Image 1 (cartoon, helix red, strand yellow):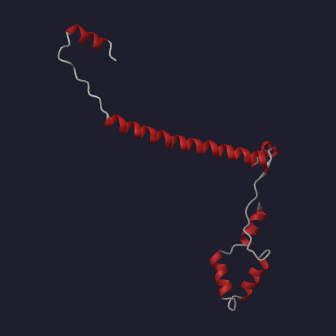
Image 2: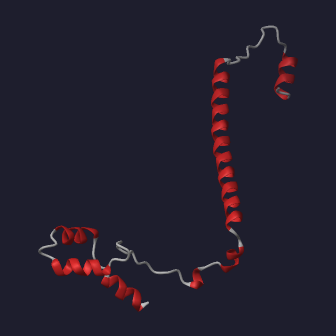
Image 3: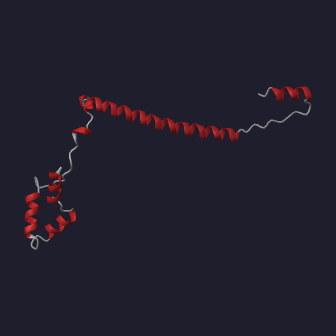
Length: 126
């Protein structure tokens, strides 16, 4: 990968440095010509290192663009369904909490309950 280092060194001009060379072209005539020489199709190239064949999953290369698009759509639909379901569950739980607070049931014991009935209620609660 020595060639990549040579290429990076040849194109080691930041955006600001290229701007100032272009702005003051009368003072930096030689550098301005070098910038013109290094441009490809009137654009500044952004070289990057290619992916090595060891990093590729070759078994996935047989899937076409349509198959990948369908998988992507299904994943998005599933994610969107989970998100909508979560919001719906939160909404339903919050409305249920409001209704239980609004209609709070208070159990009051009647005065004429005997010991046998109280014992039976304690053994078998509702």
